[in-house]
Every structure is written in structure tokens, then in C-alpha cells.
Picture 1: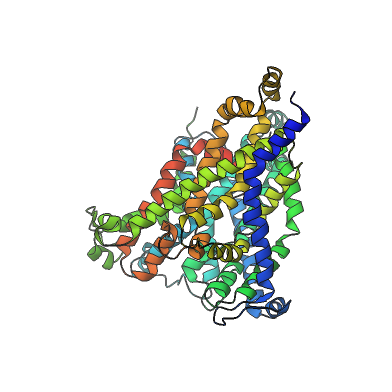
Picture 2: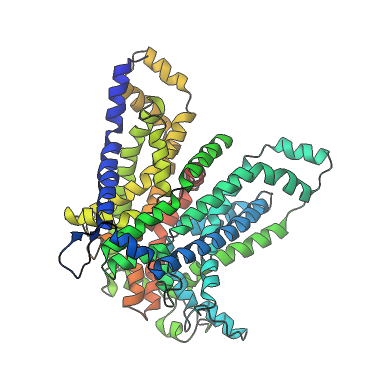
Length: 291
Length: 271
């Protein structure tokens, strides 16, 4: 075996590019982020000066921030539940032999390969009142349902998120199903378990950790939803569909208040921080199990 | 054996629903402006490629340069991500570099929303005069994708039998030689998985692109979204531009589907 010292030097050398990247793009920007959050930094005022915790104080009293948090959590939770259930149901469906399975599987994965922003542009196209196929179809069947109406917009955004991201939950739950040892099913069949019993008493309990991870990942991913909703509604009508991401983006780059936006970004990370040890543990567990 | 045509039919219906946006865009991109204006179901179908010609430069849009920027940014990100993450993964897994902390940091970073980095990156790249250059986007996207790459590489290296490396060490091979002659040739699937995912995610990036570019380095995602607002009524050209923008990642990821599935289920955290 090589000597300890050589291994140590090699370790540093091999990790050097990573460490440089982390120093330049993690440590330094994080410092900049904290510093900005404690600075009066508004585009229209030429001077910037330190203000201590004032941005945080203003942020916590800002109703738009709280409504953005509420909307984001509601949106993330609802969309993730629907996507998990639908994705798992589809995975169970694809867990059988049927004609055309291979090509349908490939087609199922297409939404993963489409950028959310481009998907949103396509949605604007098919939902357009004058030329879109969906309003056109609604007109033909005589419905006056309005997709972008204040009362319907939440449901519309959920449907769109489901169309884009169910492929992801489908893929992950499907690979978890593939890892189930077939002996278990054989044993269940010998014991006379019917299909429903096998699903609820055997498959689901065994897959519970995997399903929990997929759900958690989806929630954490949808909490940062920005592109699709921003392109579709811009956060409107009013601020009713403003996610935290949209709030931060608009505060900084539309209204020019970098200090306030930076403090919102930091508060968001603090809200998510309690999940971190949990997902690290869950994730390690998940990778070990799948082997 | 009885053929399960019922499942095929049900699965086809669901796939069709999921792909309605794509079909809608394809359909519109091939219709003439008059047909588009007269409503979605006025059937006058004779494929018309004018919109594709317009998108590709005939109408004077910047779309070809958006397209070129996306390719530069995505390929640059793939290269830098692999260059940074692959050697480090080996150091972490086989040389015990950084203990378990570097991988844990990677997971924690993966959970941190990208929006957290947007303002600091904007300040940083403004200070170094890199705003609106592909370099800024390559760096930002590599940083975001690095954590996924570390997880996938670390997983692949861990799965390799360590005996080969031990035998090589006994034969007097240095760590460099082991890495180049033994590990690298076996890393094909891991490299492919990281390559396809990184390409996909950096092609899909919108947030960093909208903040860090203004015109010169704009990729297709921001370009297409701006199309909608700036050329409001030209739906045919927009559709053609979007269909073209979807094509490269679609072709690439479908060709490498096996690795996409492997990467997503082992690295599992999407950007």
C-alpha cells in the first residue's frame, strides 16, 4: 500500500479544484449574502451603508413575504402529494408486462427532459384564450371555465406542476419497485394473499422509506419553484401566486432592494435548515437499502 | 400468455395527457399564421416550415445566438463539473479525504434553494465583470450540479471492487496511475450519468440565466420566455423556437436514457 503521506498529498491535490470552487462560489458568496442582508442596498439610492438587522425587521413585518411563504408551502405540499400518489400508481402499472411498454416508458420520461421554463411557454400557448387548444376545447363542450381566474389559478398551477414532475416521482418509485425481491411476492402468493393485500401489506410497507424520500425531495424541489410560475402568472393575479423565489427575485431585480431580498433568502434557508439532517440521514439510508 | 392491451391503452392515455403541451407546440409551429389566428381547431393541415425558418434566422430574431449560448454553457458546465467532482470523489471515497463531511455538505447544499445564491452571485460576477458572459453561467451551473456529480461518482467508486486497486498498489502503481489506468476506464456509466444529468439541468436553467445575463450570453430558456412578451402575437415562431430548444436535451437524454435513470435514482436530488 502507498504511504500515508503520499495519500494525504494526493487527497489534497485531487480535491483542490473542488475546494477552490467551494471557496469561490460558496464561502465568499455566502459572506456577500450575509453582508448584503445587513446593508441598506437599494438601487435607486446611490449610497449603501450598514443597517444591522433592519432588513430582517422590515421583512418580518412584510405581509407579502408571509403570504409568499404560505402560498409556497401550500403549493409544494399539494403538488408533491398528488405527484407521489400518481407517480406510484403509474409505477405499479408499469411494473407489469404489456405490449408497447418500452416505448411508453420512454415517452413517460419526456417531461423530465423539458426545461420548466420552456414547458411554461408551451402552457401559455395551449392555454391562450384565442388560439390555445384547451380553451378551444372548453368552448366546444360549452364550458365557461376560466383557467387563469383568481379562484381557479391554484388548481391550474397544480395541474401544470403535476404534468411536468410526475415523471420524476414515477421514475424513482418505479426503480424502487424494481429492487423488490421477487421471492416476497411468490411467498405472498403461496400464502394466498390477493392483489390488494399484497400491495397494502407487503409492497407499501417495504417501500415506505423510498416513498418518504421521493416525497421529501419533491417538497424541497417545489418549494424553490420559480421559472414556471413566474413565466405563467408573474406571481399574479395581484401577488396571489407569488412563491418565495418570485418574491426574492422581484424584490431584488424589479424593485431593486437587494438588502431586503438577501435577508429573505437567508430566512428561507433557515426555514429549510431543520430538514437538512433529516434528509441526509434518510438519503444515506435510502442508498444503502437500494443496494 | 394473455396480452395486457388494457394496460397499454391506459398508459397511452396518460402519456398523451402528459405530452399535450408538446403536441400543442408542435401543432402550432407547423400551421400558417392565418390558420393559427382562425382558432385551434380550424383544420387546414399542410405542414408549413416557415416558422422554423423564421426562428433559425430568417426573421432576424436572436434565436440562433441563444441556441449557441445554451450549447456553450451546457457543454462547458458538463466539462467543468466532471473535472471538479471526479478527482475529488476519488479522494473522498478511497483516500478518506474530508471524512464524511464533504458528502454531507454536498447533500445540504443540494437542499439549499438556488435562489439563495442568486443575489451573492450577481454581486460577485458584477464585481469581476463577468455579468452577461457564458463563464458566469458555467461557474454557477457547475456549482449547482457539482453536488449531484459528487454523489453519483462517490456511489460508482464505492461499488468498484477495491481489490483491483490494492493489487495495482502492490505492483507499485501510484495513485495517479491507478486513477487513470484503472478507475477511469471503469467509470463509463458514472461519467455518462453525470454528463447527461448535468447537460439536462444546465440546459434547463432559467433562474441564473435571467439574473446573470442581459443579451450577449442569453440562453434559449430566457430567450424563449422573452419571446412571449416581446413578440406577443407571433405564436407560430415562438412554438418553432421552443420545439427547437427542446430538441437537443431530448435527443441526448433519450439516447442516454439508461444513464439518466441510473443517475436520477442514485443521485436522486433534482436541481
